[in-house]
Length: 565
Image 1 (cartoon, rainbow, N blue to C red):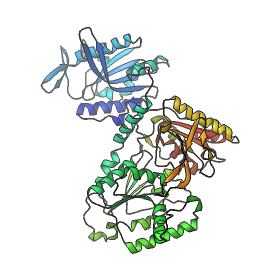
Image 2 (spheres, one colour):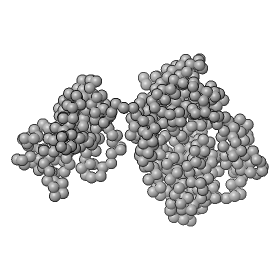
Image 3 (cartoon, one colour):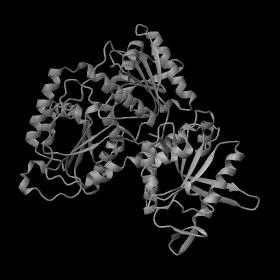
Image 4 (cartoon, helix red, strand yellow):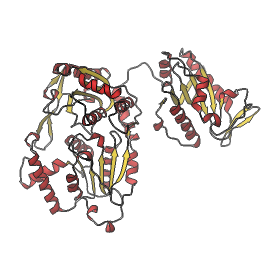
């Protein structure tokens, strides 16, 4: 499959002609080999002493030699006369041959000025027209006209005329020319901000469509892959509920995710983890000022009793919510879900007397089975839920998604939707017996991120290990940088206390649900490779929005290589 710039999914058709262009582009992308690259809607400028001339090429095909085919796509009816080819645009009749001629000359002039001596061809593509074998004009030989019959296998027609070419270093120079790339250093901060805005725009699909779904059960389950827009959807639903005067709550599994959501969700929404809900109610009953217990002091028996107490409290208090959002459902148990559902007012009414739905109401469940990191969890079967699935990742660079799919970390594969191609992840290996080598490789990875222009506050170092097993989470300094990490303690307001530093180090599990422009995923070491480890690697790799460094032991590298064989 040929690479397309910009990605096809970012191109929106607004007319019949644009829709036809995209169809032609998609056909070529599907049928041409990956040695080709396609460019859509390329603007060009030719400078003259008294004026500038501007134009736009519909599609440019680039082969591996750097040779180019310019495609001018014309949908609908054309008139072929002795004076040439003409197309109507409202009341305006334009000479297509003349337009194509100066387009060709303009690109040819620019290539020569750039010192790019490549073969250049021009084609008029007529998907809706049939042209006879003798139908040619002085401006357009018949072999440069590709009509509806040629479009049935357009890639073959282009290959027959342009050819695949031989690999050449010239191709990269032509790529840079067509992409308007200058030899200057990218300002990572500016690009990161632009990417964040663009990713937010692209991932609005769930936000736009999920609220329109009518679920008689008032239960909607969204199974979306990492970077599909689940957090945006949650925020949108919470804001709508608050605007309509409804009582809404967001409950997730991971404490750092809840802390993050609390900062960006409407102030009138309740945002907690399930564990927090249980401990807070237990502490309130005991009139204790200690609140949530420290993680190290909690036993499974303690928590089981807290869950039972919370269940009894809700049975007495009754339903209190119009909207409940449960995030990270894959990490919940059926018992916890049943407890929480009792809080939703509409779900406690018999179906036949439930009021007609309007606005966000009921239960919304957000999950991704590929991100379940707890082996004792079973996927929950909620038969009455309307299920929405999304395998589109809008956050991760396209080459990172390609690596995830090549490693077969998830099935079915996810689809890269980010406009940012990025780079292949960098793999840095250490011998599994050497802790010092691991620290050195991690330091190198952080420095590589800094060399690319990232600031320390744009880098997150994620440890594969938990807090008690990680070597990095025992450090106050890594290389030249002071470390900020969770201390395992909470302040009087039950906020996590972090050490003072500039380089953030966190565990992979605690960082789930969050992202950073640059991620260093480190301390990856396992004697054997299991499904759980595949899911962990998937979670870690999808945290990066721009760049990914991976620090892994030699034995894990060997196990991953076997996945590619």
